[in-house]
Image: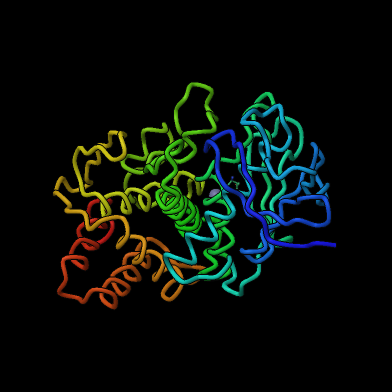
Length: 333
Ligand code: ASN
Ligand code: ZN
């Protein structure tokens, strides 16, 4: 019987109509991405264990844009996984989460009205709940990029998920999520320095996190302080997210893709941004070649400076911007 890589259509909830890489097997199509390590997307149908069933149907058009159609979340998740694969491959030359060419798998419709998504190293898989009222699945591009990047962190620096290293682990996922979202260049979900702006987790349209001024979420820290290692890793990520924003875009007011940002600095001094692409290269190089499981904020500064020195030279504007952006969030001087 015929087997082959196909290009299907996804009618997603958060990203409009997209193309999906699928597999034809006889008369059926499945959400199996033969172009990206065989990444498969499964329907848990509200279960919480195993893999449920591989999405399979007689047509290669998936979902209808509404959460009431089970394949819609499948389309969003399959698309997000493909984007994340392509982003790492084309931005950093990384082929898959472990850089071994092997795809992970996704599970959607986890539990009942489960308002979270998570990466799990032990199954090498990612899982999405359906959100409040089972109508807001957590399958947006940035959440996919965030969760799969936890797998990349595990496979590289393996930053411990507590204390300052835990904040750096969380920030790495937020930073790479922004990278994936900008890379996608999707008109329905343009790139931004916000996390979770599509999934309405607060019920009032606000995002989960803000990278220009993390404290806008009411809990995240804008700047490093002694003792920040004692707060939840999703809030101690703040200074690193803030660093990344400052390094990319610089301090002060700015509009990017129609979103207004205003990023103050801890020391009141201006930071001149070097652009997101260079900032991502510096962060990724530090993550994959400088940091270890116990790296703290001081070590993150040292590692990103070493990375910037190797990439651009120690007398470069990029190196100085890394120094200035860390000073802007209270790390080093
Ligand atoms: N969605 C959460 C996160 O990726 C799950 C967790 O707490 N690890 O951070
Ligand atoms: Zn996370």
